Image (cartoon, rainbow, N blue to C red; front, side, top):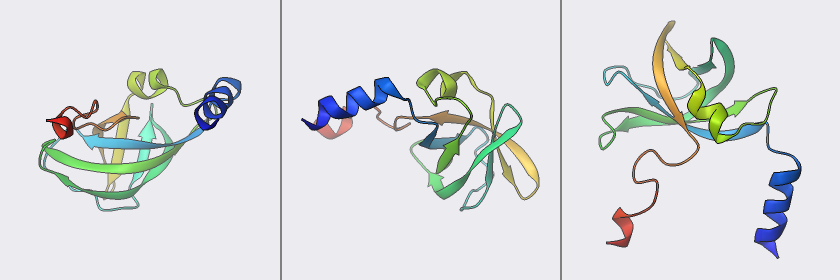
Amino acid sequence: IGQEAVLARKEAALPTRRLTQILLSDPEPMMFHGEIVYREGRAVGYIRAASYGFTLGGAVGLAMVEADQPITKAFVTDGNWQVDIAGRRHDAVASLTPLYDPKGDRIHV
């Protein structure tokens, strides 16, 4: 009942607001929370929680992203992402799935 309802809703209207994982490309800067997230130079959300991801080699955080269009996998992977930290923008990678072990292979060993 639940899975079919969710899939039908996704097909009917893709969400324009989604939780997204953000990883900074540069391993030096740190994120904490409240940093503004940009896609293609336009502010689309902010970091809700962040820390240093040792397995990923950089600061990683969760951002609630809002857009004028449906947020699909292509929207996330094709965009140029940046995070403003202390007035300086840093390049980043965004993902709708976990950046570390997205298929869950490590927990099934």
